[in-house]
Length: 195
Image 1 (cartoon, rainbow, N blue to C red):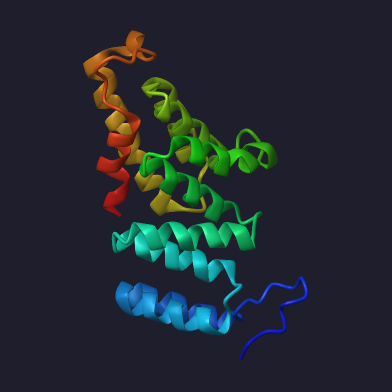
Image 2 (cartoon, rainbow, N blue to C red):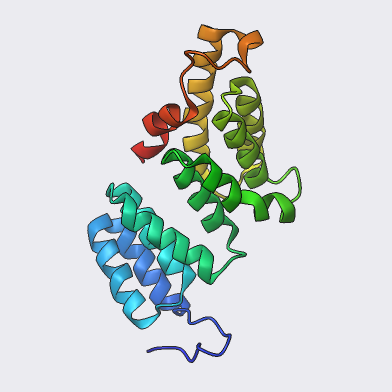
């Protein structure tokens, strides 16, 4: 069952095995996680499996394991843009804004400025700096551009709604004020970790 993979070629499970894993996840997250673990026994270098594991562990609120799995996915496949974005998003929601910025840096260099992932990164960076209007603007543009990942659009929509509430309380001219404002981390912890 195992691929050749140790001489530069990625050890990836085949389409049929991946379809089985995804079907299990769609049916039952706990059973899906067990299936991902079994698949990782056969394909330990498949970044997609590590990414799926990390995503499932976030849903199960097992954050240390989620971070390890997502980090491994990015380590194995540095050009796996979605895994890199989600790892940075996870780091930001964990209060590690500097780590998120480092994780996202390759996306900001490789993706065009109008790419939805890059717009999301710009919005989340603005959020980390408590610049709510800039966050809302970039996330809204990213949502409009994103046709690939609707669940991620739902997460960003929640953040946009929270920014709108905060802007109403603070006013648009106070966007760069610090003081007693709600921190980006507390905002994200209240919205992003619900999925």
